[in-house]
Image (cartoon, rainbow, N blue to C red; front, side, top):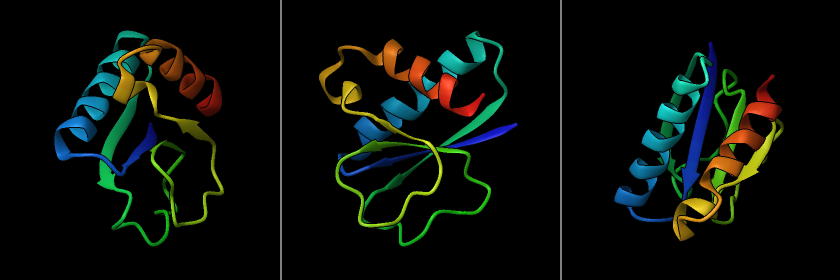
Length: 91
């Protein structure tokens, strides 16, 4: 099981939308993963169990796992492509 973090500097609604969309997309593709969301401003360091991060905003913490730009979850264009990049990063 993979652990995905959505680190967002946006509203709770947008962050939750991204978390739910990614979780549903991965489930439909048969990928077992736990997707959680946190405010980008509250993260000081990544949990060691994190396998990848979807970033919506400018992180102030070090990222030593695969990182995917989550801007499509703000614009609503290219969300599937973002998820496909995430899948490629965690496999």
